[in-house]
Image (cartoon, rainbow, N blue to C red; front, side, top):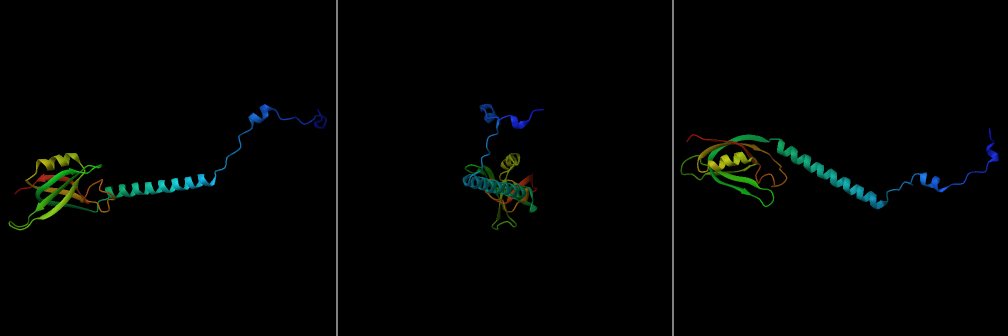
Length: 150
């Protein structure tokens, strides 16, 4: 066995330096602020998305209305929604009460368009707290329509 004291210490070569791992870079204060801002924006965006999803999938109330479809049109610059109005007359000769509604389903919108001027019964769901008009201008969303006997 060789005595280690007899051998001089070995010097570093280029291969030894290249085989060493690169020094770890520490995140500076700008990187930490950027990471913090990104985290806050991501959490806020996820919170907004979760709130919107829950509002659109939780029904506050269900109901039916009967009357004559007065107006029905597709509105919006960016988000096109179907918006309508039903005139509900309780007694002949009285001023009808207007009920505004939104439609998210194109097949139901087609049925409403076909029944303009006729007495209809609509089924709707009320979703309170919808954050933008992109889903509908009202909180009443029609889920079904049927012809009403006169």
